[in-house]
Image (cartoon, rainbow, N blue to C red; front, side):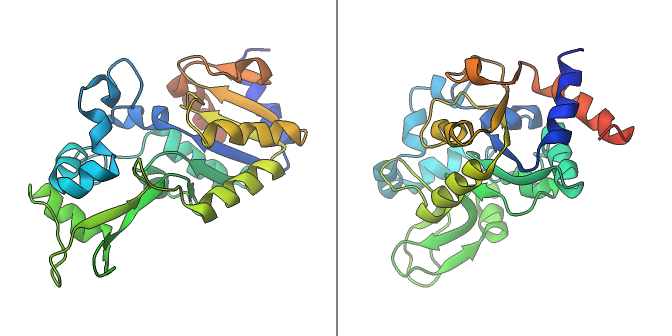
Length: 249
């Protein structure tokens, strides 16, 4: 059996299939990843983008450098990975999607109940008066080349993304762990599995008798535990998309 064809019975046999996604799934949408060859972390000041102390001293640095990554929803569209996962969820195969990403492309593709373990830019809030602001209004300001601030008190407006120096969202992490424990099969996509707590989530599935499937361009620490390992996300999801279209799934 071809390696790609092996995925069909694994998906069909799974009673509770979850998905863990990293930055690699969004590179097919034209977004840069973080640790890849041309990733953001190849730039000298990249660590400052999501550093809380840097943000507090210069919010504009964050907004200028995440214009494309986060605030260009009208330009950056979901990839074949995002759209196929949404279709697999609609057909009942995928129970939950857990993501390390902050680009909201899963939601844009139609996936619901996404667990965002690094927070979300869907909501921004004033750090002084705690007023909340929806994403669309903030995105419009950022796309105009301006830095948003609170119209009421003039305070700094920050997205509900977890910056370095902040605690991860406890409720999302707890939910991700519980979903991982329930998984009899976990599909791990575009993640190096080097960043915690995402790197630990597949272990919960394995410890409870689940299988893991890894699709990632580079090696991961858990490759030897994978029931199926593949490198090319686009090929993998082109195959799955065609399988859905031909009723193989």
